[in-house]
Amino acid sequence: MSYEYPEPFARFYDVIYHHQRDHVDLDYFLNQIRRQKGRILEVGAGTGRLFMAALNQGADIYGLDISQSMIRVLNEKLKPEQRNRVSLQNLIDFRYDFKFDLVVAPFRVIMHLLDKNDQLRAIKNVYRHLERNGRFIFDVFIPDLNQLVQGMDHVTDFQGEYEPGKKLKRIVTTRPDLIQQTIHITFRMEWDEDGRERSEEWDLPLRYFFRYELEHLVERSDFKNYKIFGDYQEKELDASSRDFIVVCEK
Image 1 (tube, rainbow, N blue to C red):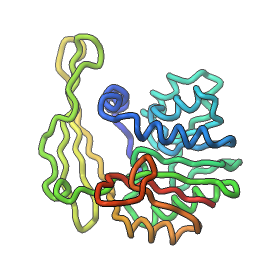
Image 2 (tube, one colour):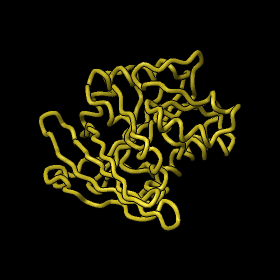
Image 3 (tube, rainbow, N blue to C red):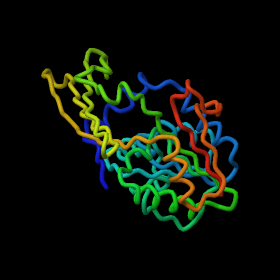
């Protein structure tokens, strides 16, 4: 499995998601990290949206990602002596010589695993890397069935500047595959650079989940204790819920 972000997508990632994402999910995961006194692992550290905030607050945090271009951006934010905390690894088969008290996989990381066997291998791998009573927390969105079926057709979800006077636009198209239970997303990036317009496209599949499917998946793993919440305040699931927050304890 490889989802290498094209260089422009990694380059502009922070600009777009600083605009798009509120701090609800970030605050939630940072609060979980503050509660944890031991070693922490972030799976899918990306360009460091969560990782840098946790590290700057004194967390003993490590990070992994499968995208070299994303790690390159993150390494530019780190001091040279801190770069050993970040590695190019896969959730399915990552390896460390030590264990963690908390592993987090925020911002839909699990949805990049399309195959059910890979999903199970990943969760079991996390379990093996947790200390006793350690926790694994991940999130996925709850599918909006109307939007899922209708999809999106060349919708501009970001339009602004990445530097003063330099325009940036992202256009999104989605196509559902109801049998494979995936959403195929095409991102098109358009930006100004060196006095001319540039563009690049990237296709990305995501696997969506339903509640009982998630329950069966976790119950097939080695985790015996878990809870699925309906939002980042850890409220119970109900008709208004938009996210699954899965908290597993070893």
